[in-house]
Every structure is written in structure tokens, then in C-alpha cells.
Image (cartoon, rainbow, N blue to C red; front, top):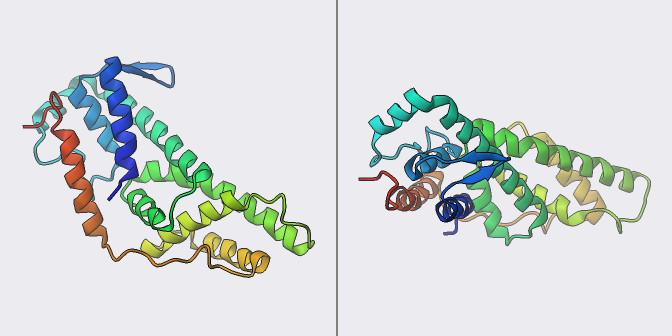
Length: 223
């Protein structure tokens, strides 16, 4: 199973190791590798994927929070902002196989709540604008030629799967998007597809196994 959150973690971690630090939003980051990894893992919800893990030195983390809490949490915020941008851009500009939207939606639901909002709100704003554009096209019987169907369908696919996995406040907007899609294209076939029979716990446990491989990198502080 390919996890996209881990793809981002591995990419930025590799860059951090090769460059012995890096700049994020023009701010230099130069924490020890283990602290950088712990900051990366703050993208996930503690209740679903505890960022400490069973094998990390908790007292060591407590120490950094006591002596460098502001710097550490600032790093956490920078990384969350970077991740949110990366996640949004991938959803907007890349085409994925249908089953991949299930993985993306499943990972999205495991993210920290504030981070989810950083991803969700701008994407829903774009989807709402596209809904309004399409409603105008249908109402005025204009050509669909210049409508950004690809981006619209990417957004609907993602949020439609999110809603199937876990009801959110987005359900009305998703239904509105599907309704106008039906009117414009006379079919929802491209948007509706069967979801894999994997539970949230199965996704979570598999992701934890992959996270442990990162936690146990040399110099990361794992036992």
C-alpha cells in the first residue's frame, strides 16, 4: 500500500539529511534529526497515530519541549504549512487512479485537526467556485468547453470518498457538486466507484508499521 503522507515525509527527511538542515519559508531549520522526525510526525492526530511511538525516548522529547518549546512548535507549524500546500497541490493538479482517492482520503482523516482545515478550506473554496461556474453554465445553456472539468472532478472524487468514510460538514457541498454534475454531464459514473474493503484500523496499523521504519532510522532516537 502506497501512503502519500509518507512520501512527503520521506522526501523532506531525505532533503534534511542531505543538506544537514534546510530552509522552510525562508526560516533555517537545524534541529537534531530525531527532533525533526518528531516534528514531522505531528501532522497526524495523536489519538489515531501517537506521534511519539512506543519506542521513542519520551523524556528526551519532554526535555526539548521544556528548553526549546517555542522553536520546536514553530518548526511543527512550518512543516504543517508545507505539508498542507503539498497535499492541496497534488489533489488539484494530479490525476490519480480511483482507488488512490481512497488512500488519500483515509490518510487525510488521520491528520491533525488544524492541518485538515488548512487543506480542506482552500480546496472547498475552489470546489464551491467551480460549482457556481457550472451552475451558471447549465442555467444559461453555455458550452462546457472552457470549464475546468478535470480539477472539478478531482475535488469531487476526493471529498466524495472522504464523506463515505466519515461524515463531515462538507456533505451538503459534495451533494450539490454531484447534483450539478449530473445535470451537466448526465452521469456520475466517473465519480462513483467501489471502495476497497479496508477498515480504518487496518489503514492505521499499516501506516504505523511504515512510520516505525522512519522512527528507527540511524540517529533518529529510536531504541
